[in-house]
Length: 323
Image (cartoon, rainbow, N blue to C red; front, side, top):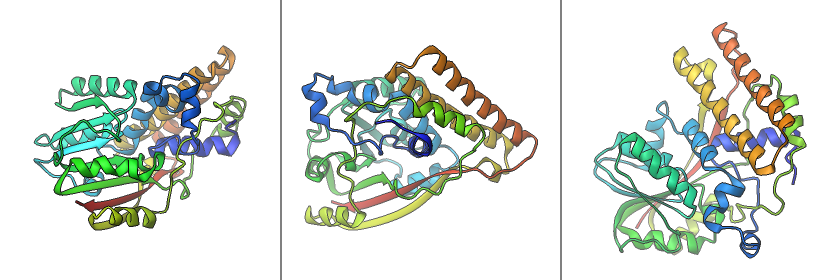
C-alpha cells in the first residue's frame, strides 16, 4: 500500500483525530506467523507510541477537557479502567484533574505501557499500568465503577471486546465505548506546501497487509450487542470535537499552542514513517524541512493577524451503558 496525495493528507488527519491507523486493515495472524513480536506489533508496525501520544495530546487537551470528561462520565472517587490505553494520555488526564480517582490502564503493547509508566512518573501521578489483553483482564469480578476504551472496539470481535469488561464492572458500573467516525471528514487543512509534502509521502511505501479496524460497525449494531449482553440504559452521543482552529481563539498564546501541537503531530508521523520505511537521508531532510517551513509560515500568518480559519476535528461516537 502506498499513501498518496490527498490520501496521505486525509491519513494524517486521522492520526490527529486520535486514531491514526483506521485506514489500514490488519491481517494480524499473518504477522504472528511471520514471527513479529506481538507485544510491540502496534508500536513498531502501525503507530509509534510517540505518535499516538502526540496526536492524543492534540485532541484531548486542557482546552476541551470538560467535554471529554462529560462524555466519559468521570467524577471524583471512582475506580476507573481504560482498556487499550496506549500511551496513557486519557487516563493521565483523568488522574490529573480528578486525583481522588483510582485509575488503571492496560494495553497489549509493551512499548505503550513502558511509555505510559514513565510519563505518569514524570507527571508525579499514581496510575496503575500493566501489559494485559482485553480478553483476559487481570482483575477480580466487580472491581470498577467505570471501564472505557477509545478506538478499540473496531479491532476485535465484539464478544472478545466486551465479555471481560462486563465481568470486572461493578453492578451499576458504566461502560463507555468510544470510536472515531472516519467517514465524517470536513476538515480544512493549511494548504501551504501541502502538494510538495504529499508528493514526498506518495513515494514512501507503507507495510503491505498491515490492516486493522476490520470490525467497524454502525453504532446501532453495537448498541444491540450491548443489549444482548443485558446492559441497561444504553445511550449514544455523536460529537464533532474541533480541537484545532487557531484563528477562532481569542487567546493568541493558546492559538500558538494549537499550531505547535499540530506541528508536533505531523512531525511525529513523519518520523514514524521515516523510521519504519527506512527513508533515505535526502528524502528525510526534504520532508522535515517542508514541515518546518509550513509550521513557520502558519505562525507567521497568526502573528500578522492574517486569518485563514483552517481547522481539524474529530467526529466522535460515544456509546454508554450500565451493567
